[in-house]
Image 1 (tube, rainbow, N blue to C red):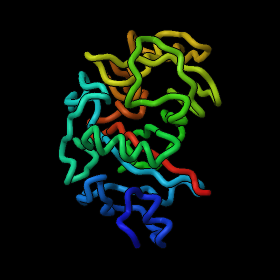
Image 2 (cartoon, one colour; image 1 turned 45 degrees about the vertical axis):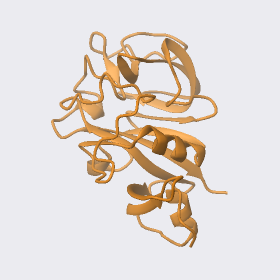
Image 3 (cartoon, rainbow, N blue to C red; image 1 turned 90 degrees about the vertical axis):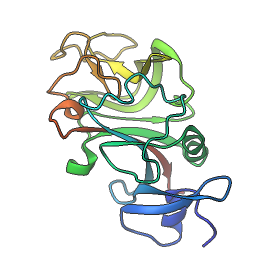
Length: 213
């Protein structure tokens, strides 16, 4: 096998189990990543950031377009983030991104989950406040939509997130929300009924994905 650049390359070479794999950056240096090869029969996912939430708050004020590598040679669920250059490399080999809650405990659960095409909504380069962006699927506390526009926030002071206490763009999850509730990354105000902020051990997990041809 040539030097793998993504989890997809490992699957194509015959790997069939989720776990930690070695891939190579554009300079030929290897680094470890967690590959999800089994939760979705049509997509291979590579973890690029994970944080214990809401307790950690390390990435809260760090948008995805800021370079903040953290434990990037020791991927883990509680505090991990690849460098911006490695994120961009993975995005270039991917078609989608997703956010899961507490994958290390529950695997993929489609309650409190979002998935989008990078072509429609690039999380690394996005800057905006309450800006409508297209997602393939989103669920917040049981409120869900498919192929819909949803309001998102990210700027120099706050990481990418959705505010479910604010209606906009056609998606409305205000029922059951707490005041100024944040979801999927930046947690200034959080709801224990949202799975990413439900328990002290809860985590928010960001992934890039490639669909199988």
